[in-house]
Amino acid sequence: MNGRMIGGTWHGDFHHYDVAIIVGKNPWQSNGIQQARILMRDIGRDPNRKLIVLDPRKSETAELADIHLAVKPGTDV
Image 1 (cartoon, rainbow, N blue to C red):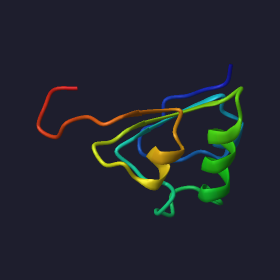
Image 2 (image 1 turned 180 degrees about the vertical axis):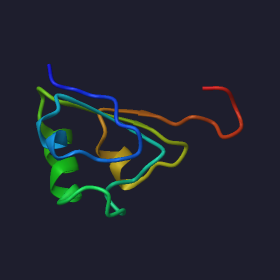
Image 3 (image 1 turned 90 degrees about the vertical axis):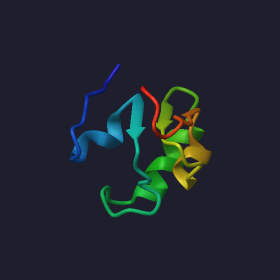
Image 4 (image 1 turned 135 degrees about the horizontal axis):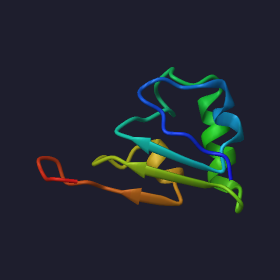
């Protein structure tokens, strides 16, 4: 399984991850990842990969996620 904790910066090998965890971001609308919309859609559709989003909002990325943890603002995660 490929994976890595990312500290605010996207790395080129993101395309090869088996599990992607997005925390408080919406790559669908931001410019942090090249071809983000294609990549998020591909990860969300692939049964061998998982997209996990931790975000209080139900963003476009969260809608594609296998797991969306809608953390309540102001609480302890």
